[in-house]
Length: 304
Ligand code: GLY
Image (cartoon, rainbow, N blue to C red; front, side, top):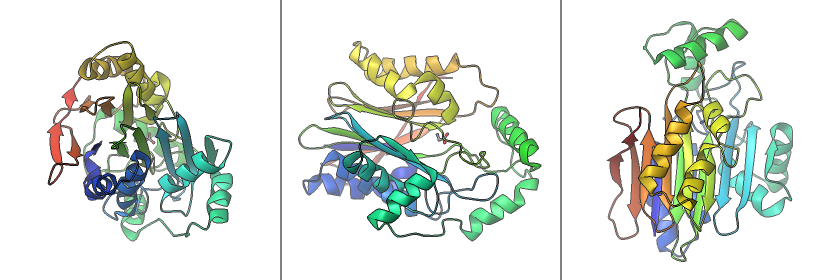
């Protein structure tokens, strides 16, 4: 049994592994791992305290996929609910749909009795208000993106990197694999914008027969390259995990995108081997097996 996650999953990975140890499924573990990240006030890229869109509203996206059945559920641009990953799971389990968005997703969450919460924290609000000052240098693609969004709404750029998100992949004692993603998306995004996180095949894919992959970074890139599914397809075609990741990163490099910033993938093969890749140096990911006392943090494969 193993759980692999993006490095901001540190606050949830022990809980995810404990869920597996207690006999929980891979789906249970993914939700158990992601929920603490969604509640973490210090993480401005996911859930509560996520950075808002152009008009100051926090809109969340999440998806979950069951590698045993290829069932999937997702919500997009949902406001006022702290745990979109849990709502995505209920979409998968209770609706004859994969993805619901906006008012429909909020209606579904309300019908199920999910508690409502104001997700915009004073810290995130201060960052949004302070958007006229670029106090930290970010990469040129991000600067270009922020300048474009600033132009759209007569705003200016923000010092925070807008492209974090959380990824969790778990493999349970039956060998079943599940993959989950949750995000507040790109900060200052146009209202209603969805990235790759709620799009199955773009930001999230799991298939017990081959493995699973999930992305963080500029969602528009992963959508155009179908990145998560590509990694799994490359595994199906017989590539090893590292080669599959390298190939998917190479596909991303071919996508012409003026706003391109960091692109990152975490993955697990069908035998429970974890790995990850990034186009940034020194990026890391974490994993923890059920026989480990704590998680291990490793450097990602760097594919510039
Ligand atoms: N990868 C998260 C997003 O683009 O929204």
